[in-house]
Length: 348
Image (cartoon, rainbow, N blue to C red; front, side, top):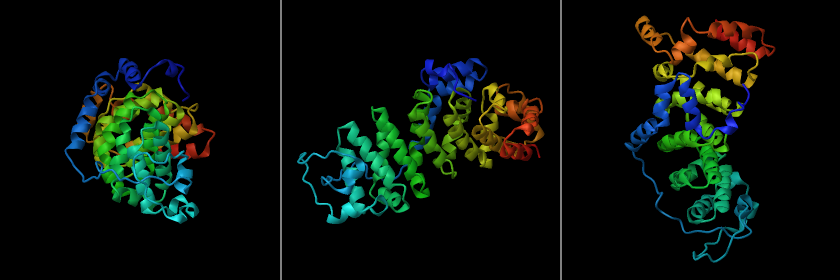
């Protein structure tokens, strides 16, 4: 489904969700719009605590001309009131995957002390690049860097928030790091809800949630956000649809999440995405999501109760009265062989 012509004219997700609410998914989405869901998530997350070194500033600066300076693109200024420590002479010969802990420590210090938004972005980019390597993911955590980096999710500059999300995305490819970063999931969800639709900020936030939801570490923090993710499917661009679906596929792979998913309120138009005109990349993930849903079998009592809920996902996609079955049959003639195979799997 392509970008809607309405999207550029509408503000953030609150405005769009308000429109979707008018189409039938009113109460659940209203809770999201009013912020009750995020307040609830924040309260849940803050009940657990983890040790951090977020308040400790490491007084080290980058040596001008070093590889770290080149990697981050910073024009370093000498004598900023902090006495420099010498970085080892062999830094210039190092690549990001072989950066030593003291170099990561230097970057974290620069991030804490910089008052320039361009500098903050470049340091975050460098940390994100370094975090593509497992050893550096561990180093950042051991230096107390995770909460320091995550604190920039509330930076007033949108570009800084985007680069923070990108850095956290790489850092979250480590299951131990996920156990720390899960406390920031409610804030990431709030960024999705309050940001402009189809913005880089929304896309970066969804990418982070994709990694975070690959394991079930933070699934419980996403229970109240199913409607938000489903609503993105009908108001956003193809790139955001794909990312939202990746998260939904991950969540629906967890049997413990299924009750929350099938009860979530959803725009009735979601079923219309099962269409020959939908981009194959979106359609394949929709079919994976539908396949996970169909693997769930409710008791007759639960099914009866769900049928009484007009806008819930069960009624829209799983109930015998749903259009999904007929739409899946029409997709058996899809020109893409992989799509046809996915459709057959769902129907089997």
